[in-house]
Length: 278
Image (cartoon, rainbow, N blue to C red; front, side):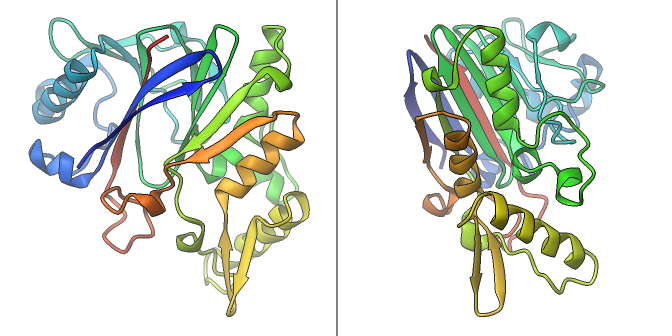
């Protein structure tokens, strides 16, 4: 069953929907993955997904939605004009994409929407003044993999810092920003096995990196290591000077929504829609 909420953040308000695998099945879909819908030419081979998106958009009053390519967890915030490809769902509703531009977030004008298919990666909503930014907030968006091993691959360790930088360009200081993380994977489901045959070395480095920078973000119990992304997010925001910061709707509260560690298959996806209303 879908979750819908109206979220005030600073001076802006968003209408947010989270739809899980059961909602996908009601639309005759295997999952909510947007990977197969990159440009308008993909519409004929994805009619069920297009109809489902059109129906959900219609119910939320959305005519234009942006779906940045978040696959690389780039921690980049881009302008809407960079999403050049228009995908017409019907005569009134479109999705804007650009598979060649990697980005985690985007600023929305009133009545515009952000959409993403996710399975435990959180969604960040940040606002200040008349501006609202929505971004993908998964593990690699919040913690640069390169930085963990001593070789940073981007300007900011976290998408939180990238968002703050964009607000600074608008002459808005962190103390003026309100920021929330939604629908993140539960900490005690997010194991990072230090003895994993493939990922063990990275997991150990990640645990040390996170523990040193954001104490309390690594939970160790009975020889098992867990990463608390909500704690990481909160610590990053507070360290940067944001005082109005919180988490809401952890996936621990929503058993109907999927995440990659729920034991039900790693291909399951949720659809997250954030429409800026004001």
